[in-house]
Image (cartoon, rainbow, N blue to C red; front, side):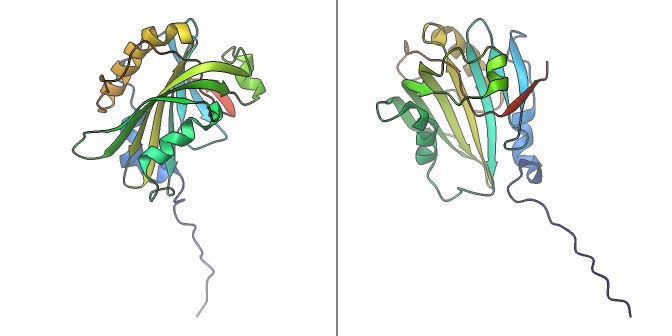
Length: 201
C-alpha cells in the first residue's frame, strides 16, 4: 500500500470568491451610473472590491467585501469604523437600520475632517487633492450570511446633493432600499480603502 500525502488546500474562508452567491449580485453592473463614473478595481485588499470615481464631482462610490469574520459584530458598530478616519469630532447625521425581508442593512451619513491615507498611485489619479478634507460619507453596511458589504459614497462638500441622486439610483439597482428619510443639504469628499487601482472602463 502506498501512502500518499495528498493534502489539498480548502477554500479560503476570508475570500469573497468563496461565497459567489453572496457577492455576485453586488458585482453586476446594471447601468445605473452614467459613463462619467469611471470604474476601478482595488488591488492588494479584499478580493473583488472596486470603486467608481466621478472627476467633476470629486466623488467616489466604493464597494468592498469582508468575509469570514466580524459576523458577531453589530452592523452599527461596523458602520462606526467607516467614520474613524474623521476623528472624534465626526458628526453622525443619520444612523439606522433599514427594513429588508432577507438581510440586515444599516445606513449611516456622517460628516467630518477625513484623514486620507498617503497612497501614491491613488493620488496620481487626481482623486485625493488634500491629505485631509471636510467630508461626508453616505454608507450602507449590509450583512450577508458569510460576508459584510460596505457601499459608500463620499464626495466634495459642494457636490454632495448632485452625487447623492446617482448613488441612490446605484443602490436601488443592487436591490438595496435607498434611505430617503435623512437630512439633505450635507456635504462630502473621497473614500480611501485602496492600495493599487486599475481602471475598468
